[in-house]
Image 1 (cartoon, rainbow, N blue to C red):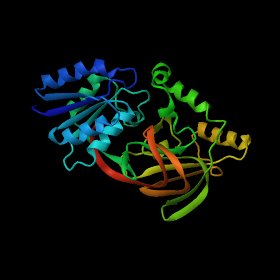
Image 2 (spheres, rainbow, N blue to C red):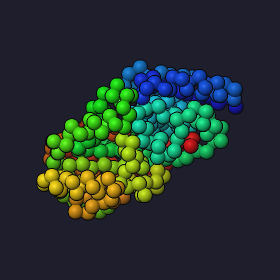
Image 3 (cartoon, helix red, strand yellow):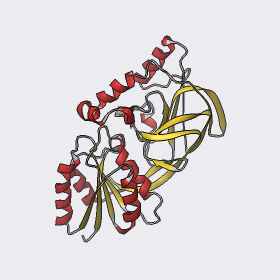
Image 4 (cartoon, helix red, strand yellow):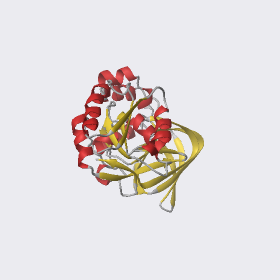
Length: 294
């Protein structure tokens, strides 16, 4: 087909399964008479640089890695005036974004998908100046992904997130926040908030699953108030396990943009990676910002 194909692979993602898939993928592209260029990430942020500098000269950019690597590719591609079509082989620990789009971990099935050529225009989130693919979150449990050691992720998978999250139950945060959304302002104390464009977060089905569409220009927004005592916490946990919105303790809505304001700096996570701290977060949905082969 004589296409220029760029492959970015993170060899450290998950258990390193992407390495064994690389030959299968390169073989299939070569048989299709495509020109393949493989780049192995060497450090954090490397996939951003590679995507930004080399993406415009390629027809397809294929990412092999976890949610963090995929996030870097998105941040590299979004500013480009000429974007390649994107493809994704998830090889991380939980792969929330891929689960929502039902993207297979099989390299053969991925290549079958690329051959069928079914482009999907996907929404991307903008958090101040950084892009995210499926979640921006703050509060309890939100640093679990990047504080969980990679070795534990590889050995225990989702259970590793549970184990790390249990450590935080003894120290529930309380952030006083003003939420500006859909023309109204809501002010309260919250222990957790997430703005999602996914049916899964940390490998688990979210409360907002039935609302999640990746091309509707809307986020699903869930805020959980800080409990006053262990009984309140049990009520919140029960609702989360049932994937229900308890309106006494939760606020849920959908919106294309929002602002979250606080007096103190709030640490955020973007796609499971450290998103830095800020007192003002402007979050905007970039409708159908990238094209993914699914």
